[in-house]
Structure formats: C-alpha cells, structure tokens
Image (tube, rainbow, N blue to C red; front, side):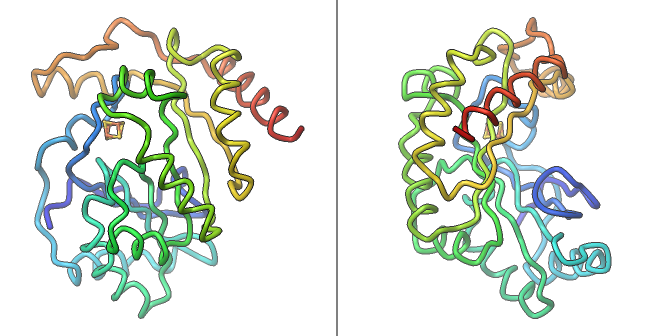
Amino acid sequence: MRIHSFESLATLDGDGVRYAIYFNGCPLRCVYCHNPDTWGVSGEDYSAEDLFNKVKRYKPYFGQNGGVTFSGGEPLLSASFINEVNSYLKTENIKYALDTSGQVDMTDDVKEAINNSDLVILDLKFWDNDSYYKYTRKTMMKTITMLYYLAAIQKRTWIRTVIVPGINDSKEVLDKYIDIVKQFPHVEKYELLGFHTMGFFKYENLGIDNPLKDTPALSQDVLKDLQNYVDNKLKN
Ligand code: SF4
C-alpha cells in the first residue's frame, strides 16, 4: 500500500500521543482542504507488516491512551489494509483511531475497521445536503449513514467541523450542525477546528485552483467563542 506520509508524536487526532498515518485518495474535494496532495498517489509503499514495525518503535510513547491514527485523504478507502495492519497491532495491544469523513460505503471491511477501532473521529463537514454538495461535491448521506452505524454499535465518536470564515462561522449556521449532533447522544465530543492557510502552498505546487485563496484564517478568538457556544448548546 502506498502511504502518503506520517506524523510521529502528534497530539490532536485522538487521545494521548498519536502516530498518524496519512493515506492517499479521497472521494471529496472540500473547498478548504489543506491536504490536496493526498488526492493523488504519492509517498512510499509499505506492507502491513512493514507499517506495523514502523509503528511499534513508538509504542513506549503511547502510554495508556495513545496509539495510531489512520487519517488521509480518506483512510477507510483502504479499510482492508487497515484490517491487515490491525492483525499485527493487536499482538502488541496497540490501539487505533480513525479520522474519516464517513464518505465510504459500509462494506464488511469498513465495518470491521470501525468495529476494531478505539475511537472514530468523524468530520461533519457541512450542515445539509445542499451545502455539503456545494463545498465538497458529494452529498452528506454516507456520513450520516456512518453516524447511525456508530450509534448502533455505541462506538466512541468525536465529531469535528472546520469553521471557514464566510461559510459556516455564524451561530445561525452552527445551530444546524448542533441539531444533527444532538441526535447522536453517544458522541463524546464536538470539536470545531479553525480554517487555516498553511496548506495554500500545496495548491500552488500542484498547479490546482485554490477556491479559498482570498479567505483569511479563522481567528483563535472567534474559534474559542464558537466552541463555547457549541459546548453550551450541547449541555442544554
Ligand atoms: S476529506 Fe480531507 S483530504 Fe479529502 S478533500 Fe476533504 S479535507 Fe481534503
């Protein structure tokens, strides 16, 4: 399997210390994507065993809560490979999280990868079918289908949304996301992430149009205010 890239000792994508593995390929074309370099195929080839041996070196840093995070691109496009890697990970009790848009069919391989994960971090990118289609070029049905599956099996789930100035940075729009999240009481955390411009250079390098090239990064103050708003609404 061709793996796009790695990030060791990451802390954002799951509990504790993470070893993030970024897969190639993505069914979406989010306007705010900061990883357009994962859309094609790049990086190096690994067998499941090679990947496990790479991960295993970081086991001492994982502690009780840390582990691997499969990210991308869309990691669940490579669900059967994840299941193969997991056959090695479990021999060392190394846990993994999935960072996914949910935009895959719920095949047996996908269900197995979800069932064996410790945590699913699901991106709820936009708030209804029209907005989802406008900004990603797909509808949100597969994401919602996955949310129902996660609820049915009571899988630990975090939901995340990237907040983009001028698109979804108002409380009126956030209320629509909150209405969805509230339907899934098993969700442990709803986390907002601020749009940033650090991936802009990738669009230039790849020679592709950046639809948000004139959009500024979201300020940390606005992000904090919106996160407080969401947290309070979800408490009530
Ligand atoms: S799902 Fe992630 S990798 Fe795919 S286009 Fe959207 S932001 Fe980019």
